[in-house]
Amino acid sequence: MEESMEEEEGGGSGGYEAMMDDQNHNNWEASMDGYRRLLPPQPPPPTSSSSSSPREPPGVQLLAVAAAATERKGPKEGLGPPPEANGVTMMMMKSCDAAPAKAATAPTPSATININTSTSKFLMNVITIEDYKSTYWPKLDGAIDQLLTQSPGDYIPISYEQIYSCVYKCVCQQHSEQMYSDLIKKITNHLERVSKELQASPPELYIERFNLALGQYMGALQSIVPLFIYMNKFYIETKLNRDLKDDLIKLFTEHVAEKHIYSLMPLLLEAQSTPFQITPSTMANIVKGLYTLRPEWVQMAPALFSKFIPNILPPAMESELQQYAAQDQKLQRDLLQNGFARWLITTCQFQRVQIVNVSWMCFYS
Image 1 (cartoon, rainbow, N blue to C red):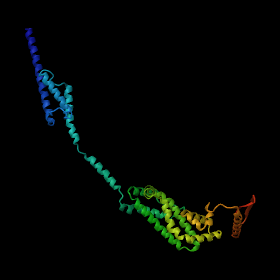
Image 2 (cartoon, rainbow, N blue to C red):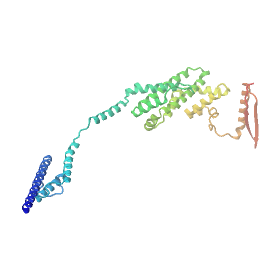
Image 3 (cartoon, rainbow, N blue to C red):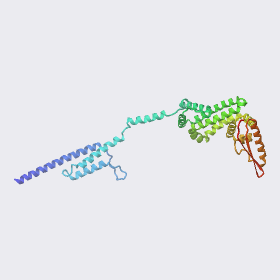
Image 4 (spheres, rainbow, N blue to C red):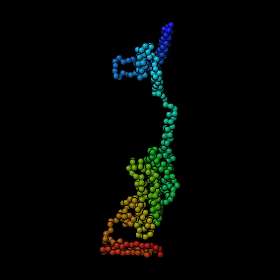
């Protein structure tokens, strides 16, 4: 009786195991059929083995190996994959399904909006030639007017930062050539007006007014050139191989100095022969300014230029010392006649060379 009970228990356990194996086998085959339907149709196997033949995806190879093992083991051995195998299979199936979706993902609307926004911002910053003529150049034109007409030492209430920013933006937007042309035209028109005003000046005011025009223009260049330094660096020096300051000085030479040099020089020589007809500072400014504009003008009056610019005349000779002493004596007499007194004159003699050292303290009597 005990043996029969054991046989029944053994038979019952064996039947339960067989039933579970069949159920696992059915679940495995159902999952395999479902996965094969998800895969794209495979090309027929090549007729000849070649290294260049297309290879199946790793997931298909792994499933094929598992299926072959299942067929070899039969219905009672390992038909139900272990939990790890089920997890790997599901991950591979999910990765295969997700790959085409990622490849075909269309750009999101937010990305398109960002691109359009950045493009519109760039287009808004573009300065057209109309913008330059209507907005930027009028600001530069007004600032140049104030700088050209200011008196030396005056304060001009303009924003140098704003003017420099206008120049910078115009250069970056490829308006350097137009801006340089407008600047030259603007200053040329100003100098032509100055020249006409000098021509209408009476002789007794001619020297003073020329000195005022020269000093005013040179003072304006000290502000104009730095404001246009960006244009000078990236257009004038690079493409024209010139310098902005030299070009602007040349404009004054051509439109003012050259037109008045032959009227100015006789007046300067006359003023030199008459002490204090004009102040020494005015005479020095004009002579140094003319030498800066064109050094060749020294040949018109070497003695005049030598009084204010060194090394104009050749070195003095010993035989000319008496002549220099006579000139100093004449100067002393002229000064005494104009109200100056108390001269201290020291004459020293070294090796039969008489050197006159004149030092004076001038007072009005």
